[in-house]
Structure formats: C-alpha cells, structure tokens
Length: 248
Image (cartoon, rainbow, N blue to C red; front, side):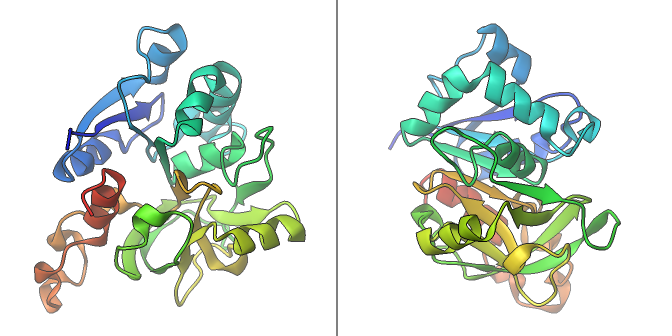
C-alpha cells in the first residue's frame, strides 16, 4: 500500500501544525505543512494529497469569530479546488479551530450549497478552557473511525466550543444520519447541544472535533499514565491518525 500524502493547512495564528504533522508521521503518513497562500496562488495544488488536516490554533487571531476569516477563504478562494477534493472521497479533518473553520465554511455538517447550518459558540462558562475531557466515540457514518476505542480521553483548549445547530430539524437530521462522531462523557465542558464534541458529513470523509487528538499520541502524554496501565495501550490520538491514514 502506498504511503498516504497529507497536507496540514496553516495560516497566521495556526499553532498546532507541527504536532499535527508529527502525529501523522507517527501514523505512517508523509506530512507537509503548507501555507494557505500557496494554494490560493496555485503554487501548490491538492492533487498529490489524499488527506487534509486543518489544525488547531487561532487563525487570524479569531478576529470577527473563531475560524471565520479562514472559513471565508476556503469558501470564496479555495472552493474550486477543495470541493472536488471532498467530492472525490478524500478525507478532510478539522481539529479545534479547524472544526470551527469547516463548520463556518459549510463543509460540516454539509449541504449542497455549503450554507452554514451550525456553529461553535462561546463556552457556557464564558472562559477559555484547557483541560482533559472524556469522550464517547459513537458508531457513525465515519466508518474509518468505527474500529477505534469507544472511550476516549483527550485535551481541549478553546473558548468557543459550544456546538449548536441552527434549528431542531438540522439537529435531528444529524442524529438520524449518524453524523455525530464524538460526545462528551460525564461533564459537558462547553454546553454543546446533546454533548456533541465532533461530527462528520453524510459521506463520513469530512470530520471535525473540538478536542485535540494530536496531543495524545504517546502514553506518557496522558495525566494518568503513571497511575494506570495506559503505557500498554495505544493512545486514542494515535488511533485517530492511524485510522485516518488507513492503518486500522
């Protein structure tokens, strides 16, 4: 099987690109960090890649709203190359700020006209939250994740992570279609509706989540590693990236 070629899209304010690239390499992919201006100018194309990751950070300082400016660049400057990439079945992953971007660009939950039907709003606490959370990985149309562990521990780091759908029918459709990929288990750190922490499109090849899988790719990154048998378990973050590159 040929090595998966992955592109990590960055711009001003992106700050999780290096660890995302390292996580992909640990999972067996060839990973390249590319500035969005390279795609906009046409100096770099998407043709050689099978996977795109939009990593966490604070793109453009989260001016206007978290991820909104980068979302507009995808929607109005890159749709001509990104739409065919998605339509071909290649994977697009948005982590934290990347999730906000994909939602506000209309790629998640996903409509024919890519209109925005959901958002990530300010946390109910009114504060930036940076701590570990517990998740349940749902069985979803994102089939490439369905063989990973069901119970996940990952860190979050966001101020606008409250998932909200535009209306009840949109939320009902998400549930009916099996597009909910992750839910917070136990405490809901930001007040997301139905404890939703991550979703995918109807095809399952575009995925977004607020927690950071790239921050749990080694056992010793977990705060409970010294007290448990986690050293003998594959970290769920590494499972996530191995599934993304087709190694699971």
